[in-house]
Amino acid sequence: MTGGRRRRPLSTILGPIEVRGVLRGKTVLLGVSGGIAAYKAAALCSRLVQAGATVHVLMTPAATRLVSPLTFQALSGNPVQTDLLAEQRHGHVDHVILARRADLLIVAPATANTVARLATGMAGDPVTAAALGVACPVLVCPSMEEHMYRHPLTQANLRRLEEIGYHVMAPETGYLASGLRGTGRLPEPEAILAEAVRLVCAHRAAGAGGGAVDPTLAGRRVLVTAGATREALDPVRFLSNRSTGKMGYALAREAARRGAQVVLVAGPGNLPDPEGVEVVHVESARDMHAAVLARAGWLDVAIGAAAVADYRPAVFQPHKIKKGEDRLVLELVRNPDILADLGRQKRPGQVLVGFAAETADLAEYARRKLEEKNLDLIVANDVTQPDAGFAVDTNRAVLVHRDGRQEDLPLMSKDALAAAILDRVAALLGRRDPEHG
Image (cartoon, rainbow, N blue to C red; front, top):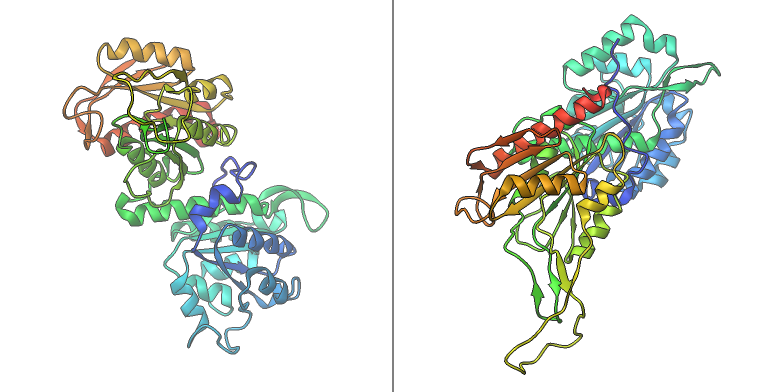
């Protein structure tokens, strides 16, 4: 049987804050066909708008008999397309204009009839006509009675959609419109929203020069920290380090290319935000700690590539410190340890990766850090080397695994090292979660 890949839902914690950076300014076409689950499409429309998307709703004639087009117009703020031959409001041919603007087409619910029409290239209503005109990802969410979903013709049609590149989301099991229990329920709006975010992230990453989308992290939630933190002495001075964030940004880009939903928590720097990645900009170690720990229950993978300050001034001076004595003595206090705190509340299935920027005894310090912080993998590099470490595009690393293995990697670009690290992360996830293997 086909009908979509089952993934662990991203929706249980995902909310507008996490997805807003991905969907803000994106044009989403929401195709609604005539299934009883059309009422859920209204909630999905609302979620998409709240996430910052511009939403245009397309309806089949049957759908208009279940939910009023006026409902979708009120929720989206845009005219609803219900008839290909009606007055055109967006240009000469509305469904063509909208198809060219679209960053994503979602068909939810997709009835057995609509699935069949999509699979055979029919274009007699706004939904199917738009599907033939878009160059963006298409997400199809089947919803029907179980016997219709299981029928060999429906399964063949769903396979055909996947073969031509559509993304088919598996229906849920529960009570159906008939009152019977079975497989065929439309997923909840939050789950569809999360899948939409994943597709937009992957599509943007590929279009930004990241190459073909690699599905090895599809549906995963990856958090990466990057760059230095700044610990303020007074309004004009701070303590910091030489990290530029290049390694962390490379990891975020690569994770997005592999289909993950990525949050990058980045310290101050000059690097552009990676495409398809939600970026949270922070200043201090405590800011980064708060941003990361707020997502501790959300993430599947955390990669601590940031060079977080271990100490901060005990007292912040509200005014600029003036020159005085020949010596200025600063009292420093410990900052919270982000990875250690994640390790203490680590849940089964989560993967934690740390970095150890060292100047000597790489493997020894890395192993100690791995154990102390309850990590699964640690990446150690000698920052005294001119072609590795801070502010360069290459790195030479030692990977220390939880099971005691050690890999000495040769000099390579930071993009290549990011790919090598995420290969190991994907292997760890596959061993721990057979559903994603």
